Amino acid sequence: MELTTYVNNLWIVVAGILVMFMQPGFMLVETGFTRSKNSVNIVMKNFMDFSVGAITYWAFGFGLAYGGISVGGFLAYGSFFLEGDSINYFFQVVFAATAATIVSGAVAERTKFSAYLFFQPFICGVIYPIVTHWVWSGQGWLSELGFIDFAGSGVVHMVGGFAALAGIQIVGPRIGKYDEDGKPQNIPGSSMVAGALGVFILWFGWYGFNVGSALSAVDVDLASIAVTTTLSAAAGSITAMYVSMISGKPNVGMTLNGALAGLVGITAGCANVNNLGAVLIGLISGVIVVYSINFLEKQGFDDAVGAVSVHGICGIWGVFSVAIFDISSGLLFTGGTSLIIPQLIGILSISAWAYGTSYFVLKVIDSALGLRVTVEEEIAGLDATEHGTIAYGDFITKS
Image (tube, rainbow, N blue to C red; front, top):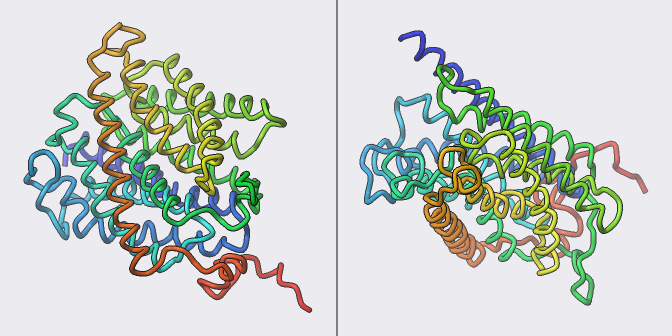
């Protein structure tokens, strides 16, 4: 093996490990933003997101995304039950698990664990891989149109975000989220400290997500991608904090989601924009996420962690921002308009595919098994009713 190949492969493995480490980040965000009586359930869902995802992506997900034969640019065929191509499999499977985990947080605190397990193979093994083929395989119809998504604002985050939207529509809001007049009520999470630690871990892992997507450590300006990623996340957290202050005091949940929004927003164009563009993308992402969370909540969409807004809505913005801020052909710096139509087509097709297929699969699961736990189980908490244990044993009280 040549030294260059060895170095590139080593970097891809390291980047994949960083992305895999985002799983505990998601777990901490979800447990921190929700009540402690459901923490074990969230741990189990996140653990199975990666475990089930790894097997299903190996069995057929990778083949649908990167198999040797492309069927009309829509999906691939081949390389099922993969042997070999270890570098590509490892880096891509951690992305697939990320898409699945986004759904977990949105539907937290009221979803049957057994029913959720049936959805995981579909998003990791079918829904996400087909979008991957469209954009990243080199044979997909979207890439042929000139669509750009460097690291996954659309491919990963829009897929997870719009799957999450389908999930919260079908499973419905948590008990107590809305009063008799339909006004949304705050349901405090168990630990904003855990939520903040989770966001820091996600930010850390995102460098593997974005910088690793260069798929090379040689003759690539990796540092510039790390810088645009950093600036957008920082800008997103700042604007989300200030926007949240319009209606009161600085909101820590919105501030944390603002950082994630900036990260999602920059992911599509992190290698294609300059530093100023990255800051502007992050600033706008922070505004979008606050207004989106509040709007969806008022419309009756109970998203326990803001996943639809962070990943779905800011994913849309991230994809479209490439058409504006791309330094070689974007509207702002060059006056170019060639990216507008491909990016819009990508937004419409990815959101429709992710939402439509997820809604269908989840509806079938709901009809067959029921997605939602009973009222009594939800009130008692899913840790005790779904898993027969509790997360924090020291908090047991004796009568």
